[in-house]
Length: 118
Image (cartoon, rainbow, N blue to C red; front, top):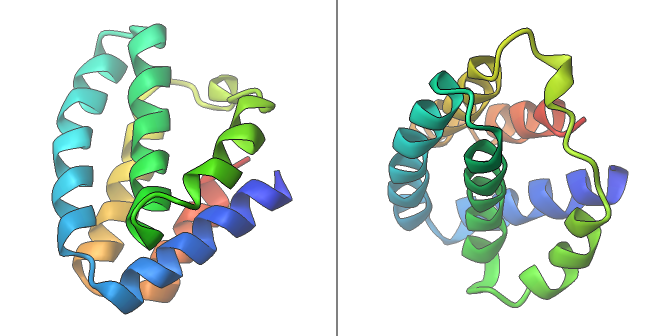
């Protein structure tokens, strides 16, 4: 878990250095489908779109080469949706990360991402 947090928050830090426009646009599109899947409680789709959200962050850091390190880490993890009363809570966490990115709050976005990865 610590390695995943480190990889993703460092990736997000790099995205802020490079510019967040492409990531912001990708995450915004991702959230539309994620919200729908969460409301419908379609767990298979939730997992797919959730992983795509995080992959977008990692890919945006260095045009994709960091994904080769991230994929083996994430593939060994159990995603803990049971910590939520509703899948919409996971959506809300993703939306908060995106809002921080949109507002240029690097530290806030990284903290929200850290807290989201449990």
